[in-house]
Length: 299
Image (cartoon, rainbow, N blue to C red; front, top):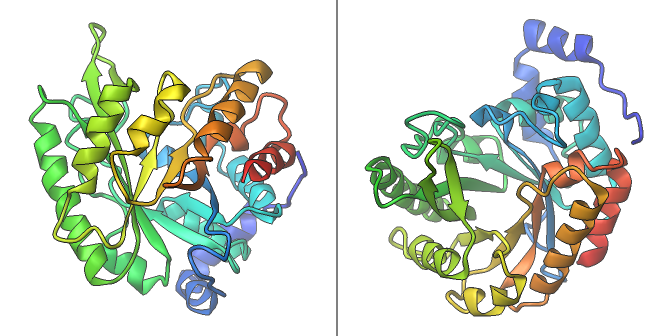
């Protein structure tokens, strides 16, 4: 991995003495359209820490080292073909101060209250970016996670909040990426997402119908357990979609298998790109630039 320099002391100094520097950097940031002529997107995701999900590449606290995470993000954002980043406010504020978001698409993560492993994980409150925050910062889109378990009342709270977020974003003409799953708790109490074709199809149908308008709604979709099912699954909607990376394991073989799954699904007409985090930022061989370049080559 290239050693992009991140001066933590300088960041802390700015945050301490001149917190307005973040808003100033956001105000002067050079923007670009969400999609270009190819209508393809490669977005690097780094909103995991805000949910307490710090593990990556087999290390339970890999993402807890903020300077290391920022270095990896700066490397990824510097590579050809990378369009932008998805993150929570603290990470995006650091990247603004580092000047790493110029000419990039910026997606703000919105609901981060469903903390990993919590009993209230499915009551996923909107504790991150609000639509007005995204507008004020001149960011380009938002993202929300929608996990649905018919046996957990918290899912209904999240569904209603998600619908209102769709309405608020559409009023501002801001794209909103919805990441839906049907989920259930196992005997150990751990929440697991169902990646069967039937479950993913159902989750896409529910997410597509949220709110009073779908004009600005995108879907963030997992590849199904059997990648051959993706064509039928994606026939569920006409909304544009991007594939998510998910957890791919820590070996080179598992990483290569993930690329192959993405390659096939990217040929489908509704699939417009990739939003991938840990697979690219914490690859098995440690080479962030190479992992990002491989993903960009799939597009």
